[in-house]
Image (tube, rainbow, N blue to C red; front, side, top):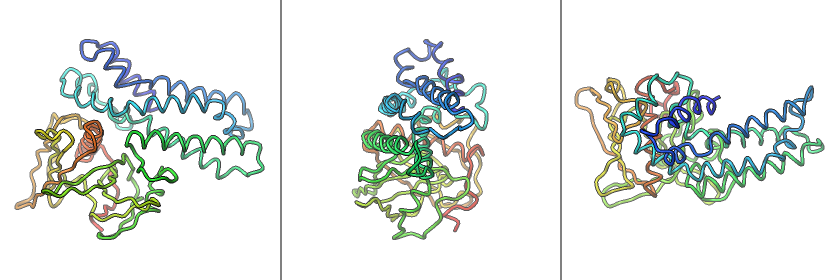
Length: 348
């Protein structure tokens, strides 16, 4: 549904507006999203036609027949995701472009443009998670077991290749893919901060990738994880244990996000207040997180303590990915469109 909505709401209307986005840029932004939707529909149609009353009993064999096309399609899309994010940063400075993607407003439970652009990577991760679950619940003697096992193995390899090569969602060290909050939580070790429950109701994992914290002349490297309400910094061991050495950063405490840092193409800064309470919502006119810099126009409580968190991405392209996702999530949290877990780790 998200792909169908995004194609109808963004891809097709923008394809007719060459005065706003060229055919070349349109291809960079949306890539082969329509092909991925067709592949999904093909698999569903094959399952319906083949199964009848035994729906779900030959999932492995069906996916095995479409496996090469599916992996090739997602590999092609994900390999261009960073370029799409760079273009999105550039295009959202264009007022005509912004009017098209924000008017009429996107319904609450439908993806905005940033979410739609990143949806195929999320969909591939969810698909792998679902196939693993089917494999775990298929008896080894079942006729479909050899097929589902091979599909899971090939999908795991492809997902790791795609994400590690792009610097998206997976740390470089070898191991089973990290696909869910539970996967992450099982590997968390808290060393210098108070432990907390990661898999709280309402919290979703949005993105993971390398980031460095810049403190004066000191630069410390982390694998950072962006969730719906916080940014978590971890060190990854050889056996994929995630050591949390820093307190998580609540996105509700971010009063300003600066992504245009002179002569520092890979750096951005988050201005953080001591408490999220007693603040106003973002100024009107700030929409969907699509701005080069994000002034939230807060009115903090008297005498707030403020600090600057300076961050550095490995490349300008990965900075663009972080920019789009962080800005979107901060805006959503502060306008009430994004879900926030009932209990924040900073409140525990």
